[in-house]
Length: 135
Image 1 (cartoon, rainbow, N blue to C red):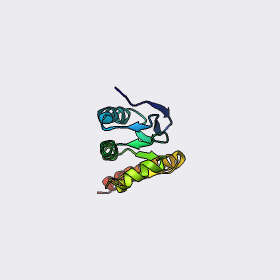
Image 2 (cartoon, one colour):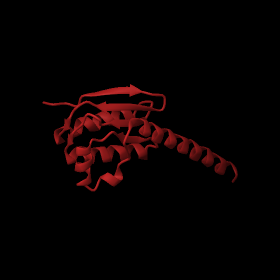
Image 3 (cartoon, rainbow, N blue to C red):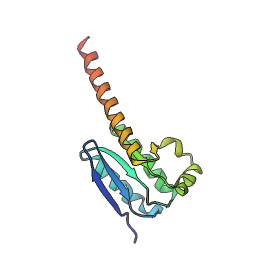
C-alpha cells in the first residue's frame, strides 16, 4: 500500500511540508487529512504545502486540500499551496476548486502570504482590543 512521503521544514511562523510523491490517489485522502491536522494543532500553526514533486492528483485529494485549507482559516491560521506543476494546474482547472485555494507559484511567495496574513491577524486583534476598551 502506498503512503504519503514528505519532508518538513520548520520556520518561526510556519511549517513547510514538501510532498515527495509524484502521484496522490484518492486512497491517500485519510492520510493527507491526518497529516495536515497534526500540523494545524502544533506551533507554528501556519502551513505551506509544497507540491513541486507531484505530477498527478485525484480530485478527492484536491477536495481534501480545500477542506484542510478551510479548517486552517477557520482557526485563524494560514494554509498556502505552492509550486504546482502544469499537469496539476490543468487537472485543477477541470474542477471548481481552483478559485477556492490559496496558491502561489513559488515557496518564497507562499512565505510572503503567510507573513502578510500573520500581520493582518495581529492588526485585527489589536483593533478588537481598542474597541472593547472604549465602550
